[in-house]
Image (cartoon, rainbow, N blue to C red; front, side, top):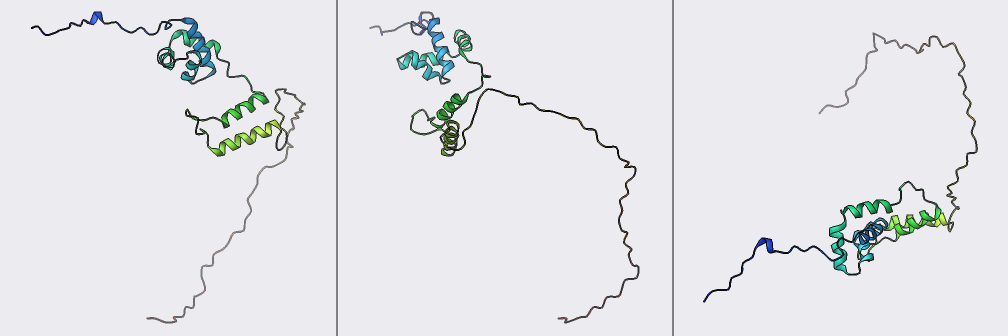
Length: 181
C-alpha cells in the first residue's frame, strides 16, 4: 500500500486579495470623508460597513492607501477657522462628556469636567456675567504721543557717605571669672 501523499507547490497557493469591494474607490472616498469627521478609524469604518469584519479589514488595509489619504485632505477643514460662541460651547460639552471605549468611565478627571461645564454655563449666560464672544473686531481708536525727556545737567554725581574712623587704642575689657570647674 502506498501512503497518501500530497504535493504542495508555492506557485499554486492562492493569496487572499480581500473582499470584492477592496478596490472600490467610491467606498474609499466615503471612508476618507468619515475619517476626516471622526479621528477614530474603526468608528469611521463602522459607519460605512455594517459587518465588523469588513470594518476591521478596512482599518488594517486602507489607512495608508493613497486614494484615502488624498480624499481625506479634501474633506479636512482648515484648522485656522475661529470658533464662535456656540461652537466653543459645543466643544466644551463634548470635552466634558467624553468617555472611554466601553462608555463606562469618563476620560477627563472630574475637576476638569466641572471647570469645562462652568465655562460652558458662563458662555451661555446661565451663571455669572454674560460673556460676549463675538468675531466683530472694533477699533475704538488710540492716540500715541511721543514725548522727549527734559535735558538736565547731571554731570557728576558723587555718592556721599560718612567715613567711620577706627580708634587704634581700644579700651581694655574687664572680664571677670565667675566659676571654673
